[in-house]
Length: 187
Image (cartoon, rainbow, N blue to C red; front, side, top):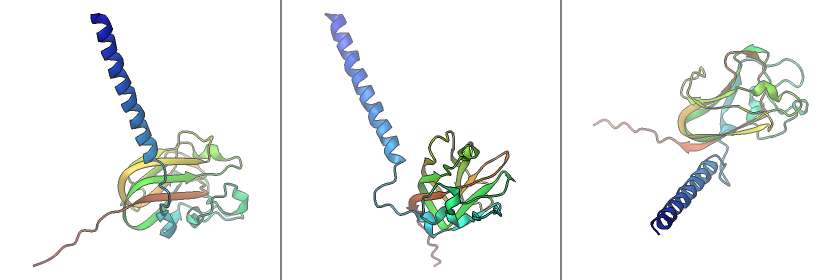
């Protein structure tokens, strides 16, 4: 009798724990989804990159924030650097934001492996020396969603640190909240 009631208590607690873990995982998944109707603030920023690959179509940095998600380099909507040491791409958002989600879309025409290890960085340093939100750890899907949990910054960059590589991006989307500006009043 005591054993049955003890097991029932554990079972009930386990169900509660499993339920909480499930709800928590839903919360984490929800955090990384782009809310319906959200505005991609990267579109109004200014993009730059470590270099421009000189072969047509030239992969200028601004192509990653043009709103066109076409993952074939040869269609002309992706960025492309030269084979640089620690190549980088960044967008200047023109003011500080609390970045919640960054979506990075790469190429699907045979070069996805180059993106392995690329880091998304967010902060206020224009030289890309900012905290890391996340890292590309798989390249089976051209789209990687990073949940940045309100990291603050004016700059969002994608960097392949520590190796000489080509960096190419077909779209980078940034979703966030504006950071309230401090008002200094002198009396």
